Structures are given as C-alpha cells and as structure tokens.
Image (cartoon, rainbow, N blue to C red; front, side):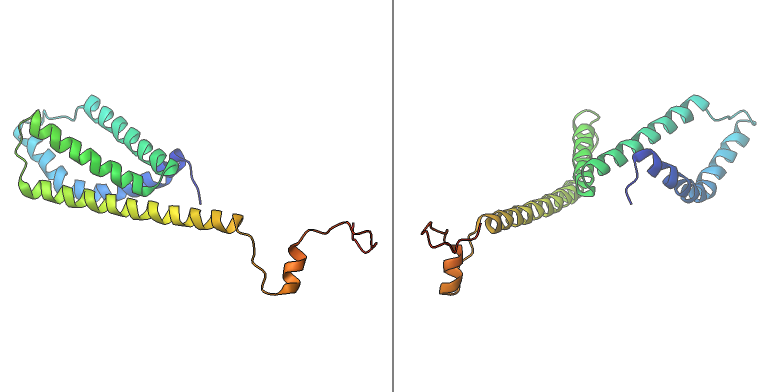
Length: 164
C-alpha cells in the first residue's frame, strides 16, 4: 500500500496521540499541577509556544514521510546520523558543551554501520545490474551442430526452400 504523506499522517497521528498521552499524563501533568499550585493558579500554558511547536512537529513529520516516500528508510537513517553529528559539532563548537569520548565512539560506530550497509547494498545493486546487462548482451552458445545451423543466417541459394 502506498500512501501520500498527508494520508500517512492522517492514519498515524491518532496512534501517536494515544501513545504520547499516557506518559504525558503520568509525567508532565503532575508537574504542571505542581507549578500551577505554587504559582497560586496563575500558571497557564502559552498557546503561541504550543501552537508553533505543533506546527514544527507537523512539518517535521511531513518532511520525514516525504523523504522516506521519495528515497528509502535507509536514507532517513543516514540523514538522522548525519543530523546527530551536526548537532554534536554545533554543541561542541558553538555552545561549548562537553562531548564525551563515549558519545563520539557511539555515533562513529552508528555512522560506520549505516555507511557499511549502504556500501554493501550499492555493491549488490551493481552486481545485479552487471548480471542483467551480461544476460541481455550474451549470445547463446549452441550445444550441438543443429543448434549452430539455426543461428546462422540463411543464404540465398535459390533452392526454393526458404521461408519468408
């Protein structure tokens, strides 16, 4: 079944809401109630912040479905690893956040694994393409003399037995 990105979001969004509502109810709601109680009931959610976050989440999900629909899930994984590397580089250089060697090794292993899988898949596709081209251009080799005579072009000998 092939769905366009909007239809995919239409079917997936209710499931996401259900699975995210459970931890929100268990973790976030008590924190919101505690913050509202400590602020004498004045703490209200910022509608602009929630609205813009919702719009960004919708756009992100739409972009993910478009990317996977036009390429593959492997491309999405590679893009995710590259994105993580860019975030680490940004955190390390601009924000001056500490990046542990465990972080670097972990992302390095993940990136190498995805790169190796992509390389192996590409090599497999090249072999299949070469086999397909070889099969299309190969001339069948006759096993016996009769097969060899069928492959030879007919010569105009004037004997009247030629088929037209």
